[in-house]
Image 1 (cartoon, rainbow, N blue to C red):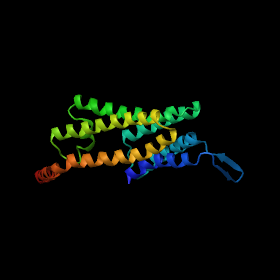
Image 2: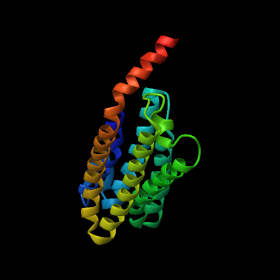
Image 3: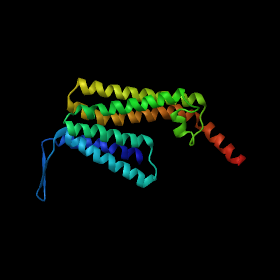
Image 4: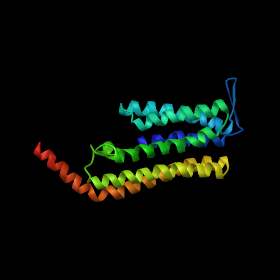
Length: 201
């Protein structure tokens, strides 16, 4: 459910962008959709509502979601204020690179990397597996951030908007599959260890 909700702002960004040039008249109020700027405003509103919804359901907020909200508001706000789409086009790269840097640094600082800190309370994995999993996520963040700028600068704005939606879905699914492939061989050992801890209690 939470994963589906996270795609709503991106999907709305894509949908509103397609309405460029169309207008809405409602009870005397007139609005004409203005391409990427209307799409950016819609994504900003949707991201705020996403955070509110997640908190209402879970009563907790991940730091990643809060950082995402901050990034969308800062880069989205700059896009609207300066009427320059490059701010919102840079946002995915900056955000993913920042996450990649954070996950990478956690690999060499502290007893546990970010993957183990995030999921360690749910599953028990060997240290080498946590390292492998963390590095896969680091690679994903840097690849996603880099490809975003390749498309933003190498192709049309319309192509980038479509890429933003479909790549978000594609890379998320790919990352989940890779994570499952790395973790699944060790789940039985994790379950056995968990049962052992419960018996000791």
